[in-house]
Amino acid sequence: MAITQLADTARVQAELIEEIRELRARRNAVILAHNYQIGPIQDLADFVGDSLGLSRKAAATDAEVIVFCGVHFMAETAAILAPNKTVLLPDLGAGCSLADSMNVENLRRWKADHPDAVVVTYVNTSAEVKAESDYCCTSGNALKVVESIPADREILFGPDFFLGSWIQKVTGRKMHIWMGECHVHAGILPTDVATQRRLHPEAELLVHPECGCTSSVLYYLEDGTIPAERSAVLSTEGMVHRAQSSDAPEFLVATEVGVLHRMQQQNPTKRFLPVNPEAVCGFMKRITLENTRDALLHMRHHIQVPADVAERARLAIERMVALA
Ligand code: 13P
Ligand code: SF4
Image (cartoon, rainbow, N blue to C red; front, side, top):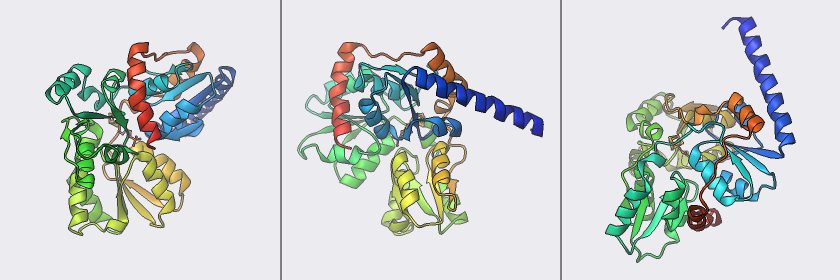
């Protein structure tokens, strides 16, 4: 891009950010952004975090309006936890392939086959699916949630197959696991990990449990191929914390690439490399400075959950937030 074009783009961006700041103050709004959002959105947000942290912030805020820079199920969760606030999602097309891999009819049929089972669903689900669940969990507390269920109870876990298999392996707890996946994380393959480890043998390895490579990483941890002290399976926020607390100079990061923004900002002397640089969530990237400005300007798109669904989903979500 020519220098004058770059200067124009920077000027437009600075003007948009200024407009968003003014509108945020005028509307008494708070901007919550997921770790996969583009850098400029993360930089102007009031809070950036993982699904669990964002749910907790939504529940605690005293702002009147929550602009949710994330995907639809996250905004729905905020609307359930903060029923008296106006929750806005800047683009209704910000969905989630994982949430779409289980609908409420699928879940009802599954429950009918296992009438005595406890149902644990990941936060990446619709409000209707949450309303049919006993517990909701995120990558940040899935282990705690499963461990809190009495050992003699049968468990249905969904919709993420890789996360479910990881929990099963770590806890030794047998569960029925739904065969859903996130197309972005499923595309981070064992071969990607192997290639990057060959190129960067000393780097610390951070893996999100939704990844297609999670099981093989656990296998390599067990047989000692990957040293346990230089690797971890974590939520996105867990990765951000680990990047700060570890003294490793270099990290391989297996999740959506957006999380590298904060890691690099907070640790300028450390090096962060994506295990798969093509792991980009197009749904998360639908949120832009323009549609965030428009959300505040036109108060759109208002995410509302029918009261009866919200009522039933709230219990499962509150259990998730309590087990943080
Ligand atoms: P985290 O809760 O770890 O941020 O994950 C959310 C998500 O959508 C992962 O793809
Ligand atoms: Fe959904 Fe995957 Fe995107 Fe996360 S990265 S929002 S799980 S599609």
